[in-house]
Length: 415
Ligand code: SAJ
Image (cartoon, rainbow, N blue to C red; front, top):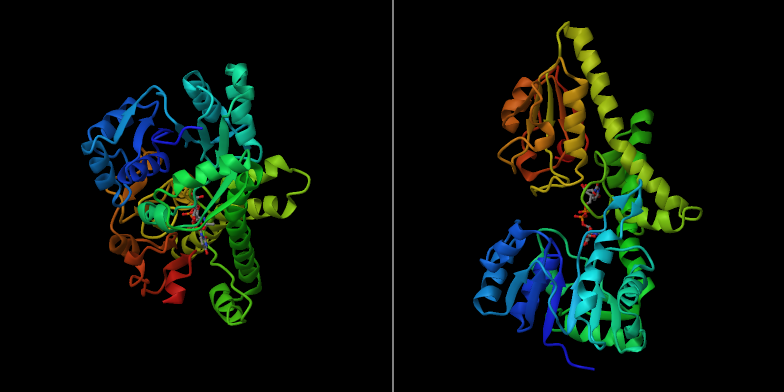
């Protein structure tokens, strides 16, 4: 068993590139692999193709020190880290196609004593499946000393370079030796605890962490709908209930966004369709929340029209999937704004997002949509939807009478 001095990181996205860069920072020779020429060129020029605090400095140093370079083909290495996307296919089933392609890409390079790590968020059994894809390409390696591991990441976007170092990690090995080899590799940069298990448990742990959060947000979202029916202020209710020493209810919102929490629980549902009942319900509750918000907006617009006889102006404050970031991926706020634009085609729909400079593609070309400042939106609109509790909105609660406010985050209610 050779020691690990070179690592190929396959997939230079939001997780792969930071991992490659931090390994290089700690003296490991890293060869990054990506299908995108743009990404490969950017990395080789010492730059980054997306925004993540501090990442650019790590990449620049790695390239300058000769420890990090990228290519579109998979080179020979002592260890491989596969960090490619696992999107949906056919509804909510995970598509393992990118993992399979990465496995086929690295298989020809193997000599039989390497460590192959799957880092992509994956359904239970995906690491075993990756190994099978490799063995199908190279049957003679079945009896070799190849090791496989799954090491899910838990880093929070915006804090990736810090959390890569400080978070605890779960490392699941195909054997104890595989887990220990992977642990030793992550130890080069991870200062948190590294906990060893088997591959299926490690795969499930990542899915369970995000499902735990999804289920708890669904509880808050369900409460918000019940409270609206019952004439109770949900924000006050949660604040009061959370004074109980063993109660900690999360915050309702316009739905759950991002590329993890709204996605990963479905992998459990797909793996256990009959038994994952609570997890499925939580997903359905959170996915239904944007439509509920739109229905609230419609009712408010109807009221304004009845009262004034004119077509109301509607404002959507915030497009990002959570506060104080510019990330629009799987954002319920953005989807609500798109629906408002389509369903209120006769109305002006004013959109505000302090973290972007132009209308996102999904809203471009819609004649009734205008990107304006928050102050402008609040001054002009009859119906105001607060969709993201960005700090920038905190002090802007509308004071004029006659405006209908749908505060989906309770930001103005909470003060
Ligand atoms: N949200 C609520 N109410 C809350 C908390 C969050 O509506 O009380 C919403 C947010 O507005 C957002 C969504 O949930 O739309 C998700 O936001 P988040 O901050 O909970 O999580 P992410 O998606 O940014 O990152 C999560 C983290 N996982 C957990 O907290 C269990 C992160 O540690 C993971 O690394 C990441 O998913 C991932 O990559 O899986």
